[in-house]
Length: 424
Image 1 (tube, rainbow, N blue to C red):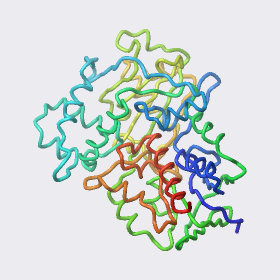
Image 2 (image 1 turned 180 degrees about the vertical axis):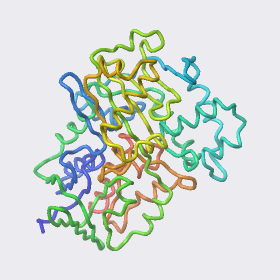
Image 3 (image 1 turned 45 degrees about the vertical axis):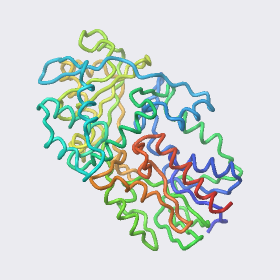
Image 4 (image 1 turned 30 degrees about the vertical axis):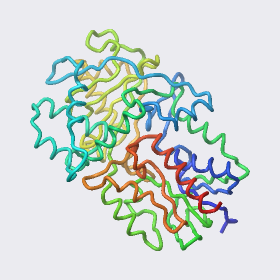
């Protein structure tokens, strides 16, 4: 067993890294255990010779202080997402100018009080035309990676208010890749006080008040306190055993769901779609394609890439497929949407990237959402246990920022502050 630290942090995603920085700034000795051979968790940036490619988090939603302050510290450039909304339905290009306005109106009418209900139940009892209904279902399934029959209406209302508070109708992306944010945090962790252990797969957390022993693939580690930043999917899979068990956390997690997502980034030799009238200056492309209904470009960045997004039930269609099969499906879907043959599209293709977060053993899903009755579940999941175990990560954010990088950062800082409060 290694020499004890003051705090063990399980997980080297953005929440764990921010907690480590905050604790070391306060003079605490930290050991951070990361199962992967890299830091960043669900922030995963790959690179071609010319530009970065995101396989995890990509967008900055609104203007959250958690990200803006880190970007300012690190001199990290970010750019506003630009481009037209394009839409294709029933094989024809249609006007997309009011696409989101109609969905926004439907969302604004959702009740925030009373008995909670699923979004599907809400739609079934709301007078909406069939086209708007399908648009709303696709939005919830796509943006929230959620099953409309499960996701809580009260949580959707909370999320909408949270987005409004940070100008969430504006989106940005890191010009040089999201990994630059991870690097900015890592560079400000006092490595004299923080021991980062990679390839440390946690199997068991044995604990009693003010004593935690963590068993990993590279040995055992102990400390008086621990911050657990494991993704919801990993916690629910019980691949990490807590002894004694934590029934209150299991109960909270029964109201939280890990949404599935498959994304594919196709890298082309040129922005050939800019030459077509329907897709000139394209930012986002929405369709009724059964496999990859949502696409977006890198606008305003010059990178000639288009990303396909399959979330919720669309992601499950790819379950069990190889990376090559997923990429082939994406090529066929985009070719169909753009009225091209897959052979002609493939001639323009330089490279392709994908990552299946559902089968990633250290994620087991993309990001979380609250099921019916789960409006307080994130808060319960994030509540400390006997001043010994602390929980952070996007699934523990109770303020409507679950599923976001800034939401994860906020929980890492919160957990670190809770630890310091009990040891000051």
